[in-house]
Image (cartoon, rainbow, N blue to C red; front, side, top):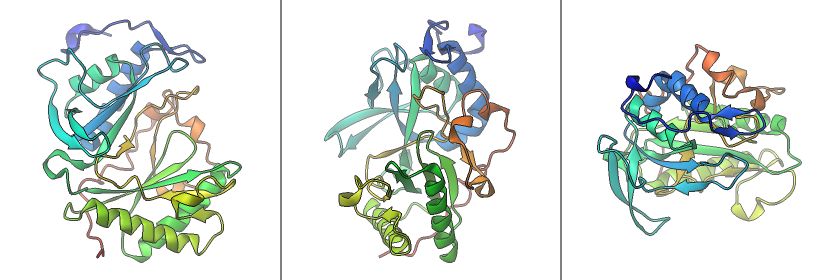
Length: 287
């Protein structure tokens, strides 16, 4: 990897960060370079939270909200008050390839983003449905619930987008006009969850039921000020180097194996199922 192609001072490229697969930091940086054309438009103007694993995913990592010491002056940052942290945080914003490479060079395996952009931080432009299974619920059960959710949203005239979480669930996202509060979007997701829970015993819509074995929680609580979502195309800190992968809805069917969507396979796909997401902002019927 030629260092003169980027502003970033690359370091420790041979360090192994995924021990089981012997994946190095250099390979992680290469992955993010390859996926950048699909990823950067979705990241643009969003506050980021990084999960860093400088000693590899088998060692303890850390969640970093503030731009770290030594952040180059060309990396864009934005100060915002975080209700979850109860303090002002200097977030990183990634609008260009050099910043994405710099993030990867920090051994930031996972990149998380806010649901609102910098210029409308209080008004989300994404509604987030986290379809989260509790064992022994299977991934096929998650698929079943995701398809029920898609059908319900379509009945309301809403186009949704889907991705794997990179772990055990699926994420569905609605791009919306940023004119609603987090309270409104959270309540919208909560009401959809209640509706689906009334149709299938697989689903619970209340946090109090989330630890019941074999259920799936439609997590509405993530639609809160300062909460984040794993970025589309972000790597996950899993033994198989999985990716939170946007998919076309017709690919969401029983038998889908999310472990097969990983650092090696995802860059080979030419399709970008979320290509029109930002340009497809919709109105919600909310109170």
